[in-house]
Length: 337
Image 1: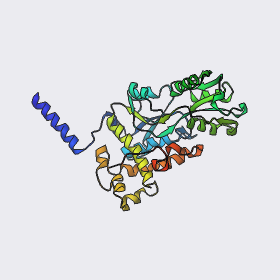
Image 2: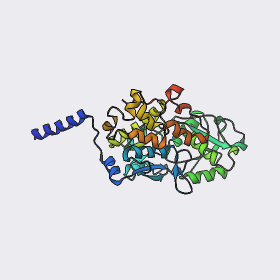
Image 3: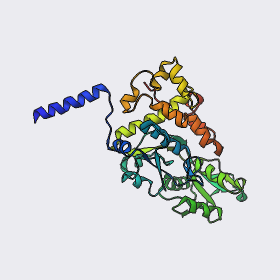
Image 4: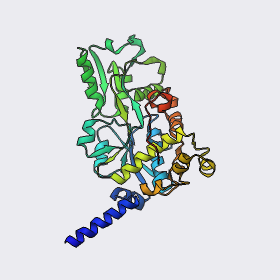
């Protein structure tokens, strides 16, 4: 028994010394089936929404495609599974999907009690309020006694109650499970206010028949860092998800785009770019990927700025906190080295 333990310890030490990532069960399953199963929103413009032909688009969708490009070599090898706020975590927990990429807030309770772990922040957001312009309301402090449409199973519920209590105000909740149904109720006048992440409100407002008839109030009442999550024991997949996100940000920082990534790999004299794009070093090997993984990622979806402008830009939301650190934002990716 002692000899076996010593042998196993020696094998483990050897693997650690080589820096080679070992595939876990989920990563093995992804490669075996030849597709990545990704839980996304049922339909939120800018994040995840299908068109009339069933083609998905959005920043969460693009991130799933980036992962498929990194792991499987093809951004098209993704199975999108639409989920709502009530079943998204269960869908991940039960193994129906490999990753949750569903404009989901990273919080302490979710990180500690749901058997999942967040790999990073794809979008910094905050909770806000949208009201009919006809009400003449200019501030959330004027909402005392209002009826508020709200989705269940979200951090939005707790934030709403906390904020109203802190300001000695009251509200009447109208809780409806599906986004499409809650929007019907709001636009039909069943509630005075719709509250959600500000990006979600901008998406909903843009999709309204008369966008100018609706006003997003200036207050942001919470912090909502949105990001992808995987099951807690999927450390190999977690590492790939995390560094794919960082790679998209690093690509923006170094001016690597979907249009020039192939040329950058061949001609760049920057040691950092050479490492990132696999011309030198063994970053891919350490992740359990090949050297060209980030070349494929950026070639498929662009860098973070390209993803943002393609998906969030049309909503009229400025980069703000989602800008790179050097541009006054919060996006500060660790170096790929």
